[in-house]
Each structure stands twice: as structure tokens, then as C-alpha cells.
Length: 239
Image (cartoon, rainbow, N blue to C red):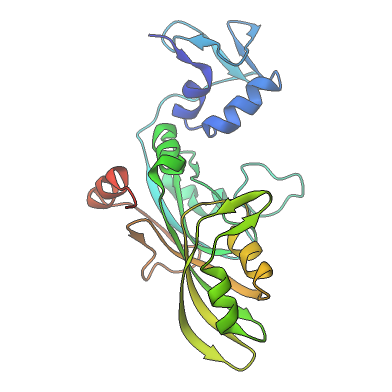
């Protein structure tokens, strides 16, 4: 049965569907020796699909991983600057997995990784509206006023984001630790929100994604999602 090329590449665990579309647009994908185009289809049983001249990896058992990402690691699959990549931390998974969404280099905490492209796309699709919760250590002159500002709709990069849920965890001289829950996952969203509110982020750690919680998982460590967690996140919708 034929499928869209980007879906085949994603399902093989090589990269996300969006990254596959970029690879196709860049002319890096071929089907039976012919450069593929967006919208091209292929049958994995009878057609030869190459990415950068290499065939798709054989379909492996699907893996669903929770990693506690430390600071200093990037979540892009290839980095021109040679920085450490989160894939280095999950080599023991026995297959190639890639991040579901991103955490910037200086952020920490819960990061889902998988070789199941359909799962990754479901989790990242806006219709699921999966919340993300961060412990955010900040400094600023008026934390109370900033918290009120964070709870209002904001415009970031030309897009009006939904109001965040903000709770005060600890107040200290010159700053505080806040728990911030957002309902989108835009690039560096929490950092940009805090900057607009007059706060400087000192530490940013994701502790929950939808119903999944980081718990006591240590920095740099990972574990497989339990069957119960997998069922919960697959059926989860924010109200």
C-alpha cells in the first residue's frame, strides 16, 4: 500500500514528519532513483526510498521514552556547531529515537523521545492542546506584577498566545521560583514571556507534559513510558 513519503520516513524513525518534508523539498529524497516531490507516494514493500542516498532503516519495535534533559544538550538531530545532542543520552534504547518537540540548550527537564512518527505528530498537533509545566527561577523587581502580566494574553513573534497559569512556589530577595503552565509550545515561549513581563530567567525546567510528570527521574537519565502512561497521553485532551 502506498503512503506519502514523509510519513514513511517518519514511521521509520529517521526524523519527524516536518523534517522529512524539509528533506523532500531540499531534494534529498528519492524514490526508485527519481527525486521525490512533496505529495509523492511510495509502497515500502516494492519501492526503494533513499534519504541522502541511504535506504530507510528497517522498521523496529516502537519505543516511547521520557528523558530528563540536562542543560547543555541540543534537541536538534544534527548540529552544525558540534554541540552535545540528546541522542547521546539514549543510546541504550537500542534504536534511533528523536525528540517530540524541543527544549532549548539551556533548558532542562521532561523530553519525550520516540521512533514512532505518528505518535510524535499526534502529541505535537495543536488539536491535542497538551499543556507543558515548568519550574522557572527568575529575578525581577516586581514579581507579583509580572505574574499578573504572565496570566494575560501576550503577543510573541506576531502570535497571540493563550494566558498562562502561574503559581508562586518560592519568593526570595530579587526574584522567585514560579510554576508556569502554557498551552502552546512555541519557540522559547516561556523565556520570551518572562522577558516581556520584566523577568530574567535563571533556570527553566519542564516538570510535566499533559498528564505525564517528570517525578524523581535524575538529570541525564531516561526510562520507557509505562503502558498506562502511553494510553493516557494518547487519549489526552486539555479541556
